[in-house]
Image (cartoon, rainbow, N blue to C red; front, side):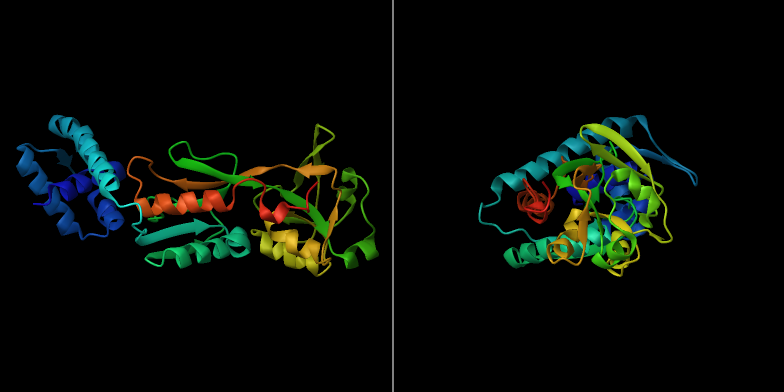
Length: 303
């Protein structure tokens, strides 16, 4: 019996609450999971779990065994890291989730640079405009823009994510340029369906200010809003990582630079620091280095 894998299966079953969920997460068949559990119970000489059709619960022996299995798995991971040669390149597969806007605007280029450096790593990128469950959907790493991270997850800050108010020259020629942030209420504002749908938040001269906005177009991702702004439909609040090129090229005009939209943190989010695979650690370190300090897209754009 592979006792280490049997312990890994046992811990995963407990963490996910069922053998079927553990089988999916570990990419094993249900019979293989059951066999590992049976062999582990035979080895320790006691039943570890009570199994019913509705729930799974630990026996007294299971409660004693679980923390020791976690400790053994952690020690095994530490051992692998200790003997790994410094020049060993990362290898394996990573499933990464990110929003469509940041994925297309910034992350694809970063991942291209990473896989060129480490061709032994295969990346599967999921661009989704929703918050995924990392465990249920077998996501190794999520890139999230938020100031509120799930406390059950580990988050490493990559950089600050800022936004800008902007519109096309055509829209401004037709409808005028707002001179004060309050004047946004008089314009056709293109809003995000999930964030700031009817209220845009700013800091103006150190004061917090919320401005009610409305418009005839809303969308659940920022790329659509940018395309509408470029077409002259209205004024948009866009992440600077996405709008920077259009602003520098003159296709969009930045408005009200004295009004700073609420800043968010760009985070790399994963499930566990203790059992973090070396390839995942390598990816997080790479992204943290690439996006460190003042983001490249903000340089010379925001003052």
